Length: 288
Length: 325
Image (tube, rainbow over all chains, first blue to last red; front, top):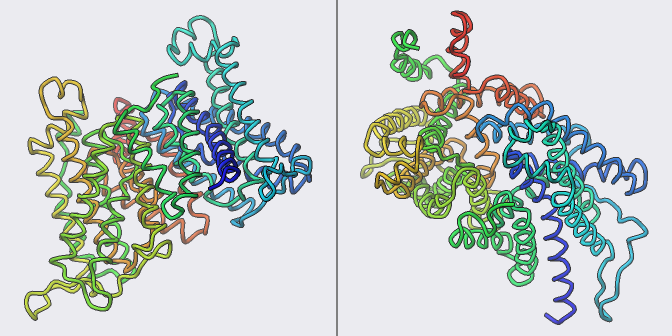
C-alpha cells in the first residue's frame, strides 16, 4: 500500500466512522437521556435514505430532499414519542424492545408498499460531484469530504447544544432527575419529545447524507442498527464521546479490514467488540 | 388472587391427549403446522429460561438454534440418512458449546448492554455462515435425507416419515417440558430465580453468580439446539436466515406475547405467533405489517402478554383488582 492509497483508505475510514457516529449518537442520546432502547433506530436511517431517493426523484434537487426530509423525520419522531414512547417510560426495557421490534416490521413493510423492494441509486449533487487529485493516478470524491465535514459540524453543534444552551441544561437535568425538573416548572414531556425528535432526525439525516454514496436498498436499516449497537457497546451506553471514539475505531477496523483481509472484514468489527468487552465490559467511556 | 389460585386446573394431560390424537384427524398440512408450533415451543421455552426465569433478556437466541440446525446438515452424509445417535447429541452439544463461548463474553454485561451484545454476537455468527462457504453461504444447504435411528440393521425411527417425525417432536416437547420443570425446582433453578430478583444479594450471599448464569445460558443454548435440530429435520434445508436477528426477535416475541416466566406462556406465544403468521401470510404478502401492528397493540394495551388475558377479563368482570397483572 503506497501513501496515497493509505490516505484514501484513511479518509474513507473517517467518513464511515463519522457517519456511524451520527446514527449512533442519536441512539445513545435517546437511551442516555430517556432510558429508551430503540431498535427501530436503523429504520429511521433507512427512512432518511429512501426520502433522499424519492424526494430527489420528485424535485431533482438533493437540497430540497434534505430540508423536507429533516422536517418530515422530526415530525415523525415527535408523533411517535407522543403516541407510543411517552407511555412506556415507566415500563420494562422488554416492552420497549418489543414495541420497537414491531415498529421495525411496520417500517420495513411500509417502505415496501410505498417505494417497492428495488435497489436505487441517488445522484451526487452537481456542485459536489468533482474529485480532488491526490496523486497522478488517484483522486478522491469531494462529496465524501463534504460528508465528513457535515458530520464534524453536526457533532460540534450537538456538543454546543447540550453543553452551553438552556435547552441543553434542561436536557441534562432531565436525564438525571425527571421529577425534580418537572417540579421546577419545566415542561419535561416537551423536552423528551424534542430529544426523541432530534435522535430520529439525526438518524434520518445520516441516511439522506449516505444515500448518494451507498445505494438505497431494503434491509439497510438493520445492518446499520447492529453496527450502531457495536458502537454503543464499545463506547459505553449513554456516552456521546464514547460513541465518537468507537465509531471512528470501527470505521478504521472495517475499512482497513477490507483492504487487508476482504473475506473476514465483516467479522473484524465483532472481534474488536469482543476484545473491548473482555477488557471493559461497560465500554470505554461510561456515561455522558 | 387466592380465589383464582384455588380454582387453578391442570390442563396439561388434556393438551397432551389432544396433541397425541391430533394426527388421526388432522391433515398433512395441519400436522406439519402443529409440529412447527411444538418445535417453536421448545425454542421459546429455552429462551424463557433466560428471559422469564433468570432475567437475562437475550436478543441473540437464534444463534444457538441456527448453528445446531447447520450442524445437522454438516454431520449428515450427503445422500444417506444421518445417524440419529450422532446427529442429535451433536446438534444439542453444538448449541450448548456455542452458548458457552458466547456466554463467557456476554454474561460480563448487564441489562440494556446484554440485549445489544447478545444481538451483536448472534449477528457475528450469522455472518460466519452467510459469508463463508462453510454451510453453503447465503444460499444455505439441503438436508437431502433426514436422520434415522438404527440398531444394527433394524431402523427404529425414520424422520423421513411424517408421522414418526410428528411423534418424535411431541416426545421431545414432553422431555423438554419435564426437564425444565425439574430444573426450575432444582437448586440451580432456585439460584437463577434468586439472580433474577436480586443479583447483588446473591453475590453477597456468596453464590458464584457468573457460573450459575453461564450454566443457565448453556442449558438454554442446548435446548435451542434441540429445537434447531428438529427444525432442520422438518424443513430439510438450512439458510443463514434461521440465525438472523429476525428469528431472535420472533422467539423473544413468542415469549413475551405468551407471558414470560411461565412455560405454558411460551407454548401460548409460539402457538399465537405461528398461527398469526399463517393467517396473515394467507391474507397478504406484506404480512409483517399486520404482525407489527399486533405487536405494537399488545405492548400498548396488554402488558403481561396473552396468558394474562383470562385473568384480566376475570378481573374486569368481577370488578377490577387484577388490572396491573
